[in-house]
Image 1: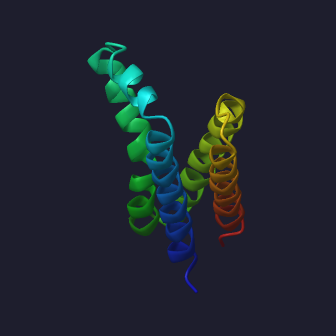
Image 2 (image 1 turned 90 degrees about the vertical axis):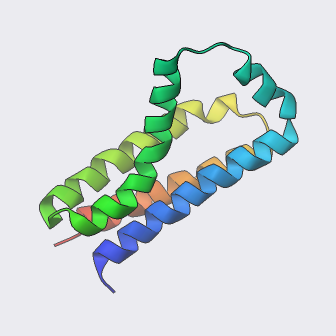
Length: 120
């Protein structure tokens, strides 16, 4: 199978895992959504959150259209960033389902890195 498709699929799985965790988190503790909404974050913080959340979605597309060398390094760098970002954030998520879903997404980040690293 084409490496581009495999790596794109890892980003789809990671993105859906992030989204599923967000949905479960809202149902698990709806009050946190209200607290976040009431924090009066400025538009630049929300823009940063939007960029962060959009990045894995864009990686699906970029993996398919970028030239192989650029795609390879973009996937390694972005997947490593998300792995470390989630590793640092892991202790801040008390529910077991959150830890499980973050571990799954981190596993797919590692798979992405492995496929990109070995992409010839």
